[in-house]
Each structure stands twice: as C-alpha cells, then as structure tokens.
Image (cartoon, rainbow, N blue to C red; front, side):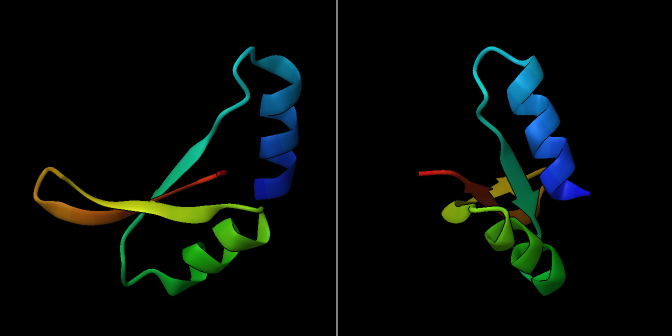
Length: 57
C-alpha cells in the first residue's frame, strides 16, 4: 500500500517529496519506510512525542 501511495503521489503532485513521521518504537513502520527507499533524516518531537522523520536523500 505504501508503495502504491508513493507512486500515486509522485504522479499527481508537483514536488514529489514525501516524509514519514514514525515513533521510535514502531519498528514495523520503520521497516516499511526503508523498503520504500526512505532513510532516517532526523529525530524530532511533535506535541511532546518523539518521532523519527524518514524521507529520501
């Protein structure tokens, strides 16, 4: 599903840049992001919760 959404977005948006904000404990979602060619870019905090921002380099 994630790969299909990425393809759709790249075909229908101008910038074609996407990120995933994933909680550090959510290993499954991190694996999905990596399988989609994303890498961890930085650690961040949103509303007091830690997240890892994944994106393409």
